[in-house]
Amino acid sequence: MKKNVLILSICLLFKIASGQIDSSDYKDHCLYLCKTEEDFFSKKRTYRGQILPSEDKKVIRYLTTNSKKRTLDLGDSCSYYFAYEIGDEIQIRPDKDPHNFTYYTFGGGTKDYYCVVYGYLPNYDKKGYLLGLTSPAGMTFMYFIDHSNNLNMVQLPEFLKSKPKLLEQYNVEKLKTDKLQWERNKLAIGIKYLKLFLGLNGFKSQ
Image (tube, rainbow, N blue to C red; front, side):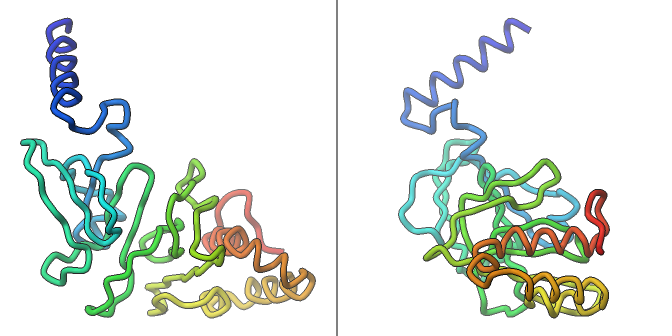
């Protein structure tokens, strides 16, 4: 045991001395890739290495376990990945358009029903549902996917159509809520109705 700890300590000191990422931020800089949607929801991800600083959000620079520098262009059609994870950041590409390389923050859900949000620096609850994130211009762009009814990246009312009573509840709540307040709470409302749709414990439709 002591021998293993010593070896690990030496490795960490070597990384710091050679200018690699600080060991205290190891988890936050881990890069994982998921090739397909099936892999993502089955939690079959591949560790690629530790990310390196980069100003380009679409190009990820990372250091492999063999200390080799690599570059991953997220907009390269020859290198398609459904999802990538860096620390707590979970970005997926649910659009079926082969020419659309836009990634969205995973909002939570199952393989058949889930949502995505455009933004960064997400914060999740213990069950993996989005609590908050940083959105461009302070606006929330949120989309829902329903594989059972072949709905891909649609608005919440369209997503709820397969459950009329839940859609009615949504419409009533929207009418009773101030428009500005509704827009400000768009993310929380979307996650709430996704959970209602999935029938999660503690979330019951009226």
